[in-house]
Image (tube, rainbow over all chains, first blue to last red; front, side, top):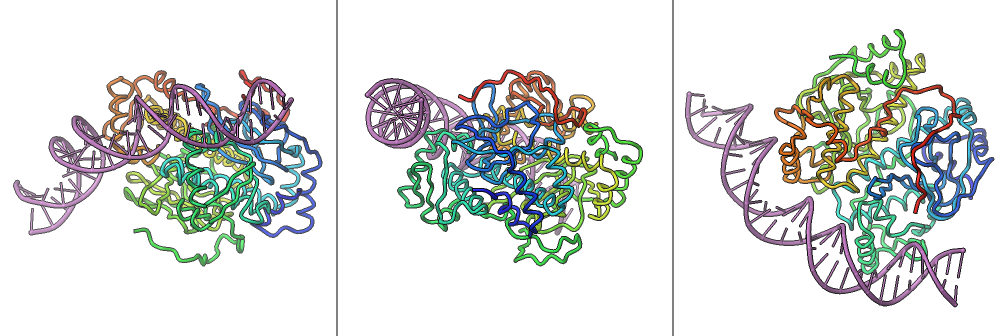
Amino acid sequence: MSGSLVTKLQRFTELDKADRGALGRFEAEVRDFRAGSDVITQGTQPDRVHLLVQGWACRYKLLATGKRQIVAYLIPGDLCDVHVFVLRRMDHSIGVLGPAKVALISPQLMLDTMDRHPRIARALWWATLVDEGVLREWLVNLGRRNPYERVAHLLCEMWVRMNNVGLAPEDCFSLPVTQADIGDTMGLTPVTVNRVLQRMRRADLITLEDGELTILDVNRLTSLSSFDSAYLHGERERAPAATCSVATRAERPRS
Amino acid sequence: MSGSLVTKLQRFTELDKADRGALGRFEAEVRDFRAGSDVITQGTQPDRVHLLVQGWACRYKLLATGKRQIVAYLIPGDLCDVHVFVLRRMDHSIGVLGPAKVALISPQLMLDTMDRHPRIARALWWATLVDEGVLREWLVNLGRRNPYERVAHLLCEMWVRMNNVGLAPEDCFSLPVTQADIGDTMGLTPVTVNRVLQRMRRADLITLEDGELTILDVNRLTSLSSFDSAYLHGERERAPAATCSVATRAERPRS
DNA sequence: CGTAATCTTGAGTCCAATCAACCAATGTGG
DNA sequence: CCACATTGGTTGATTGGACTCAAGATTACG
């Protein structure tokens, strides 16, 4: 399915026909990656911008000890390396989970598009800020939540994100990750992840089979992991003015 | 001391007199914050861009349980919220550690500056990418390193960063954080942090008193925490060419 | 069909959290 | 100036939960 990027960016701002057309050109050249292969490896400087079109991928780092830490998941509509223009080399690798399709975009096309379509540029900026928000929330996860909460929180997040690109119509979506992957994400061992998932199954919170996750009780899963999607910044922007009277929701003073 | 931002950005790219002058105007209006106060609180939308001029600050999130997770440290030259233009509200708070000085920049001035000084815009983009790199490395820390390594790694990082803005001439710099703060950063209890620091002192790795850290043995501290500053992207940019032959290190295939 | 990867389960160990004092330094108000 | 409270640091004893190790069941895949 194409157009995940459009779906995602439209969550932030309205795009017109020209914008959508421009984004469509991103997918002119698509390459297949086979399960487990790397899209980009640490230390290199990619000469193309990569857009994940189908399947899942992850950013990860390997330690000298052989341990691995996954630092982000990428789903259709996510860009791998918008920063090609700025950084000399990747400080992490990107690998796909299961087979995947990746669009290759020339840096020139990328720059031109952002130049001619300020709304797109703005929306892409928003997308990177959301990614940053996710990183911060993961730190909270690893630092201050227990294994059960961590995994629950991760599932909630991925559910919302998949929803945002139209890939989780029901409370059910493709989750092609192994328990070891989840462990490498949340700082746990495969054994612990296994036990956590079983507890969740027994509690009728989820089912997870053949890489398909179904969330049976969204409310309970979100509350038990104190999941609050605010950090995903999913609400549409208002007036782009810098001086807009901000009518936020109930804002409680810090105690 | 003024001009930390210039020092920092020049690490990435050469700035001319006009650039430096423009950055100087950022510090026209400076406000004092008293120890422990918040610069920005979660959920609000700041109407100014904040630049830390003196002292330390941190980004943090509070959980419903009262736990706190620090997700970033800010030192002189760091911007708090460049994204004011894009996001509706902060997904975290920023508080100062010890007394601090913060420059208030109008969004308009910020935009104008980036408009008229593309080098600055580019360098600011670089700075945010470095911040992102730090977030990823912290995830590695929390997920895959033990308490001793974590704290050591944090100290190495802060040493390099302080160095980069000229605030750690010797292997010694101001570190106005409590042991509880370090715990809230690295997902540890104050007690554990205390014991870790003592081990480091006994091993003649560091001294830490009155908020002044001295690293006695940089080599050992970096190696024991497998600290590699590559993720801070400290090397000057080369030609902005997209096609450079990349001589990477040993790359092993993913198992 | 056979091999490897993944998932599952149990038993034992260890490390960091927890709980609980205590000390030193700092600051505050009477 | 002193009694007192507060904060940050230090130390010890205990506990519990996640890791480790190991083996078996199941699934995926060439």
